[in-house]
Length: 442
Ligand code: NAD
Ligand code: G6P
Ligand code: MN
Image 1 (cartoon, rainbow, N blue to C red):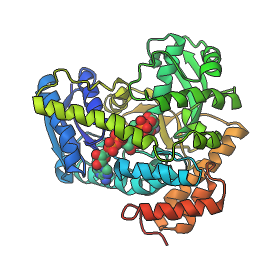
Image 2 (image 1 turned 45 degrees about the vertical axis):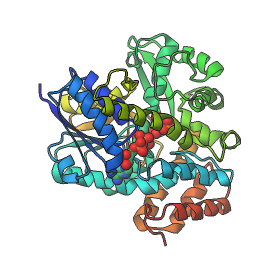
Image 3 (image 1 turned 180 degrees about the horizontal axis):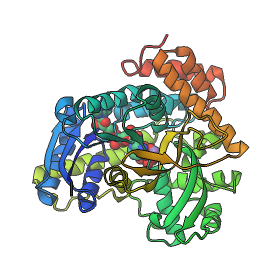
Image 4 (image 1 turned 180 degrees about the vertical axis):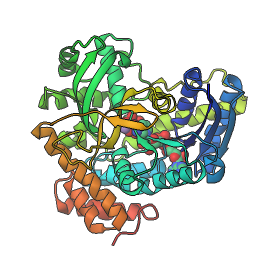
């Protein structure tokens, strides 16, 4: 069996140790000969890398391991780049969330003005990774889950249309795991789903077991009462109280269209007033993550480095991230796995912009994804999606042409923003906060 060389870009990410543990747990399915970490922040990455080195020494000493900030060293001799960078790190996420909240607008990592600001930072960072990959390992594939995935995907469509980049999100995976629990199934893989939308903006229309039995009625019964709240979710990423609120809120999002089951992120667009009312403008999700996951992961890594052993470590396998292995395997072994990916519509949703980047089921093989046909979507979803996809396209247009006007239009068009006046106030604050990260707008 061929063994693969993997590069994790954004090596200093809080998700890196969980993903490395997951990769080691899946070596029988996806053998690895070399594992490298790449980041632009050496100090941050060194802590994660120091712990990963010990983990590998204990669990798989045969795998060559390296952490670097040098692009040539990182991207040379690589089969897959797993990219999860956060340009501006949590310090900028905090501002993305807090600036809109000052104006009583949703402050969120990927939705509304915060997501737009993050998009303006991410585009350049992700394009740089693609260019390094193509320079040093032209046959490699990038599996990208750097956010905001919708805007990043549109930017890759516009600016790197021929690059081997697959954009994927873990939210449907996480929700489907909950659905499997609701149904009493062992795994989400026992379900075949139909789903459509944009990233962080979609709906399930059909869910069946392998015999073809319709599972939607039982799921709807649960979601109508409890949203996606389940007793034992098996998900160790979305565990904080704020995530529980989001899973419960899916009940109200579902009520608006009981023909489908919603992605949790729709709450930011459909109940923005409530989201703002329940937000603390001085302590947002970025603060929760910095005080929670970031502290936890870095403290545990430092302990491992100090002891030179993982004994007693509380770091856990991010098993739900195994969708990344499924994707890499689909490319490497031509498995034709059916997965939700963010791809160009090209008629899959027949009554929707063919150039939109949509999240839909695809059959993935060694040539990449083949999207399934969705057909026509209803007026409600179509209207929402047309507005949101226009926001995403305008952001990318603004980045390319360095246009203040387009970005003002993008923020104004977001369903989370009440007026052009508020949009301008937020934009002007965001420009100030993002100096050095955004192109200079004129
Ligand atoms: P993090 O801040 O802990 O890690 C991100 C790392 O990226 C940092 O170490 C930072 O130094 C590095 N980085 C920033 N700019 C870079 C660049 N230009 N080149 C190389 N490295 C760079 O963030 P996190 O919370 O662990 O999340 C990482 C990313 O994964 C984020 O974009 C997050 O939104 C995304 N994410 C996506 C999904 C999904 O469903 N698609 C799921 C989870 C996380
Ligand atoms: C989900 C989404 C990701 C997002 C993450 C945020 O997994 O799919 O795109 O980055 O949630 O989680 P956090 O714990 O950082 O708020
Ligand atoms: Mn996501």
